[in-house]
Image (cartoon, rainbow, N blue to C red; front, top):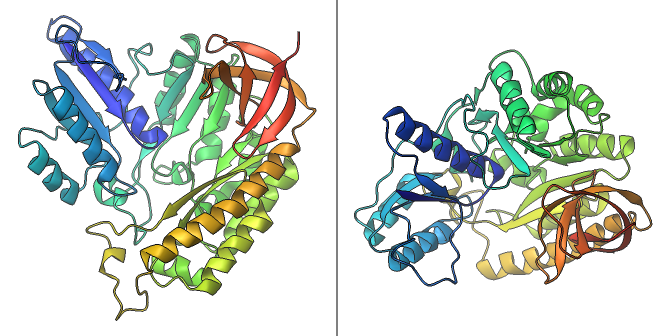
Length: 425
């Protein structure tokens, strides 16, 4: 049997996809069945080959920004592979399931590979260079715009001992990058008397080797509670100088409507602390523009926040109401009237311009630096390869190099979304 697992969205969802692959393999082996052939990608431009087409698809979908992308994936799959069985996992809220069944009445929604994993088949992953380790599920928040918590529920942290064991297995299998991920890594361990900083220190102590850890998204109010301990973790060269702190807005009024439980100042304190300790640190954040009730003053506050805290990565999203969320009920009669779509587009374009200028200036500080980078994947431009440096910045290099190779490079130029490097002989 051939099975295709196609994941969308965040690292946590890709991690769940790899967990699902290992679960399906283990189930087959435990029943004495032949091991299925499992693939993670299907070339969208290739003609279907009946002899090599998957017998089943697991579409591990993401609906955080709306259902359109997940529904498009489902339509394309059913049209191109009409004989394949279709299973849907991932962030699939009730409204999405109803739409999916209208497109494909035979689709099913199985219990996915949720929960803690005791890694048995470390080789089964999308990228031989990257090991994704889900450290928790769920969160401790109830943001008014978010449908993910309706699917994933409350925080469930996984055992630090098992996480350390899984990381060790992946490093032993050749992984150069370990991604610790979850719906909100910032609150990891709060349900068992520990935290993310303590987990990272356990990994650094008990897993020797030539690898780097990339920490997943963490809400500011949680990370603020152990900021100093986390800063200590980043002093180890095996931790990428990168953090993802989703602030969502620079307006306290908008944050209140979002039911975000941090303040703008919480985010500013963290941004200042990390950039002061590590001047070339990569600060990543998320912004939602056009949230109901957002005024011009609110939007300008967000623009100023980006100018002042200077993130090098900023995921800008136009607000989309998700069915079943509190924000979907906001209307003209509420304190949070909808923002017209045309204004959302204008604001997102304006913020993107501001951010890209900041990012290009940040990246410009790398020009002239020499350091070792690790090859991650082929580049988007023909004849290039993408590597990652110590701050998880993508470095575009001319030429073709094997994944996982370490190269000594000099940064020669910078763009908003990447550094340009040349190999030093």
